[in-house]
Image (cartoon, rainbow, N blue to C red; front, side, top):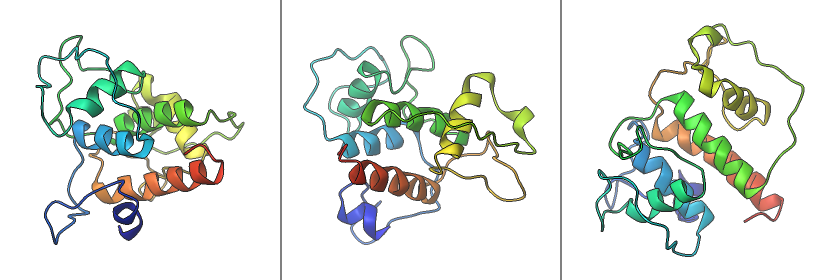
Length: 171
């Protein structure tokens, strides 16, 4: 928590609280990735009717969509307040990692006991993020793809990503 706070990657929920057990929303993760990248403000257009101008996540969502890091739940909806599943988080983070510093695929294949619960669109991302050591299972050889992604899990994943990107000179 100290690392992400001191590096301005994440902020607390209030001045003196952090809430690591809180579930992440789509807007929260995209905003954290936006802060990690620290991009110039994009002049891309907002394609999502449910992402109003001036919200704390507006620029982050526009930037992430324009850079292929996220898609909406439809062509016109992003669903910023929807809770993020672990498989959605893995997919979004892998897209970001590939944008910042593309990595070679590894031959390793994780055989989680709940692999049959993984959506087809998330399978490669879960394998990639596991192979890179950025995101792990939840214990008992399970990935828990449909469970919600918590702030605590995001911290662990993003610190690993941030440290590797920093060491590679990518950020």
